Amino acid sequence: MSLLPANLMERVAELPAQWAVAVVNTAPKTPPDESELFFTGSIADEITFWHWLIAGVALLILEMFAPGVVFMWVGIAAMITGIVAWALPGLSLEWLLIIFATLSMASIISGRAYIKSRKDTTDHPTLSDRGAKYVGRQFVLEEPIVGGFGKIKVDDTTWKVAGDDLPAGAKIEIVAVEGTVFKVEARD
Image (cartoon, rainbow, N blue to C red; front, side, top):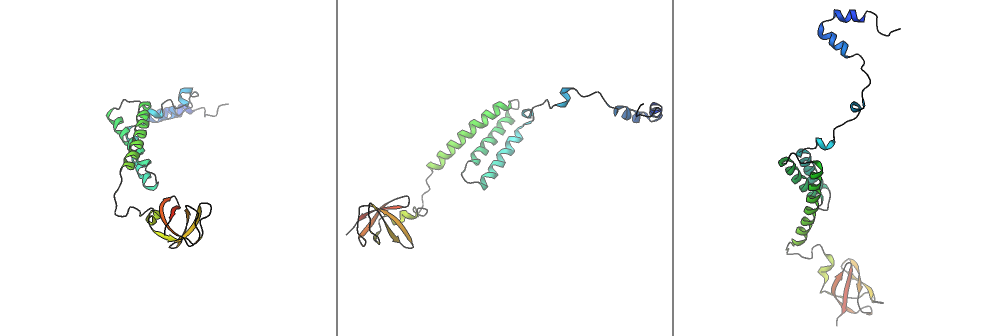
């Protein structure tokens, strides 16, 4: 017993020719073979220079929201890789990834070296180093220095001091700052 009506072919013959082709083409086919089931192309075949340029711009935008100045250098490397992909369209994805990785490392290393070597001169060199502005100033110890360490109150803050053992009330001068500890020496 067939699920299709017995007069199907007669009814199809009565339809205009273009309709008949559509009806016949919708008939079930044989099961697809394995090559039709899986994507045989590669994502590498789909990546163009636009993808690299867009990734570079996205990384530059991400740099605005993340501290550390790392995404900027990687974004620049991605954009340069995009330019290389545009100039050499036959270059494989493997070579583009090697170029990108090399440019990323080179740009991060050179960018960090550039930032480190660039010392901005300012009329307030101790602005971000609160303890450095106290070097050379003299104070009176409120607590004795015992075992090489003590405390002094400077303005509204209590600071740890390191130096020779001295009694409370001794006059001291701050000679250096190491982290949050003042190095002090006795003064008369």
